[in-house]
Length: 470
Image 1 (tube, rainbow, N blue to C red):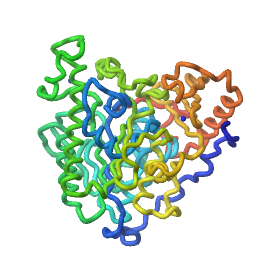
Image 2: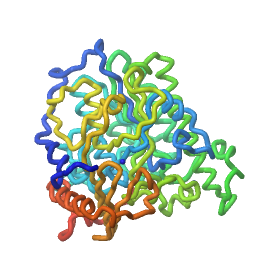
Image 3: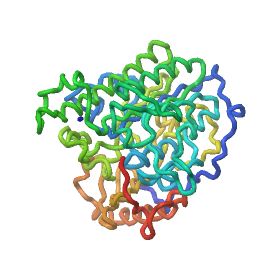
Image 4: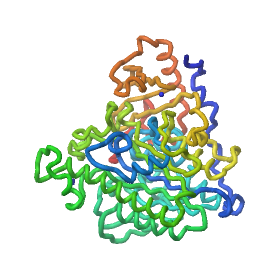
């Protein structure tokens, strides 16, 4: 079961960051990383539908997340970390490619990542990294003219164990998992299997820099956990049906995810790799209030203190928990209010790996390594979102603390998301010039949608697309 604004030309900061011109990768031999140099190992841990308020380091007290809290205390907590989309596939594609959803080819949950897109894994492998993905790979249907979906082994990963389909990833006790390109029978809890394989991968990869993308599938539905995990939480929360304690089970799922991540962190400590490893922890979008969640996220107020959730562009849908640990580089015991967008992850991780600023990956995101290290402020720029799929129609543009949300094709709201994180007070009448400016910017941004992202959208207004399960 169970963040006085300076003038900005429409699209300003965006136009200063050129789009990816050519997905031409150098060979590993041309840019191989010398293991004796300081290129860090990189572990990116992504949870599925985990709300900002679901972890202890963001204030959760109804259950404990000691391993994540320790990771956060040993690194930096980012209070304003934003995903690129309020749903799974576009969010993940943007993180992996450093490009907005309207540029990476994945604006909707049913879109497959185009084979020509360059992922973090491809970029790092070309520089001598060993790469692996264990967990959820959210594929779409085959793109026009293609016989099959793009497989993670085609996108820079040397190893893969997990789910390719989103609906497969609903299962926490799967009967089958992909081992590379082959499906095999399995038994046990999915996250245990993914962490077991991660531990094995880390042990085998010692002596050479590695990139591990651990893409866990909790607490996304199904809402289910082993009885022994649920037992400590039974009776702690009101339940609609005590025989089916979904609220207790949701708590158990997150507690288990914390324990599984703890096993991997312990291995880094035991092997002495922790000091040489950058660990990033975050979520793909905010917690969901969908039917199959059975009201658990709503009961636990998982996105607190924010408004909305998955499939909305209010803070609850796109602002997620995040912490980064990199001993000696990312400050320990620090909380940052600097704005980070998921499109920044790829260029920043490449910078951490020593990639020159004139590398061929010209993406939408910014290299925020100095921000992560606490040496600089986030760049002064406007950030954008669109969610116009599955019958939804929302756009957003944010500059500093002020965020414009356009819903239903025209209704505008302006919020100060620092003083009003719940987005209760619409202050657009106080800032009419800014509202008009941000509105023009987001429309100009939409006009830059690439052909590969436009594929499959019906005629008419860009963004309306048939739904897909996530």
